[in-house]
Image (cartoon, rainbow, N blue to C red; front, side, top):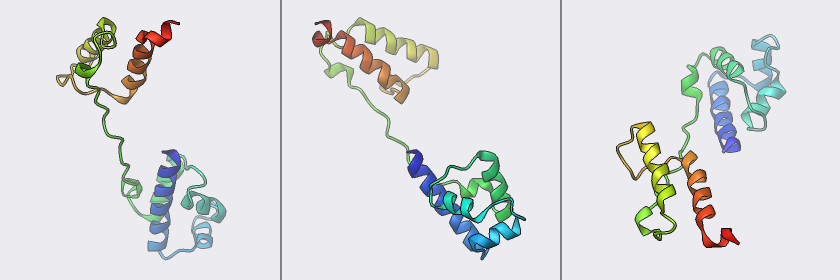
Length: 135
């Protein structure tokens, strides 16, 4: 996902620079060498990650709000685990307690929502409880 984000951000940076009518060399000239042409080119190609402070400064140079330069990031859809379809053994007491704790701590009213960070934990619990893991 990092490469995808860097590529999308780079395209936005390139569009902003071109909107100003500047070449890569001209960005270096307009910033008195603060931004080297080769570095800005690497940002634009997504080959190099840009720090937040450099990103904010470049947006300032382009006279574009930084928020407008950020690409739209597509999110991974929420994972829904149908606990009712799991066997009694797999959806046993441990998983039920874990999900109840999540709902309580997060004050979550929708028991069908499981965050991505929970996915690994639930997966580990299910693997630990499967018959193959007891060999």
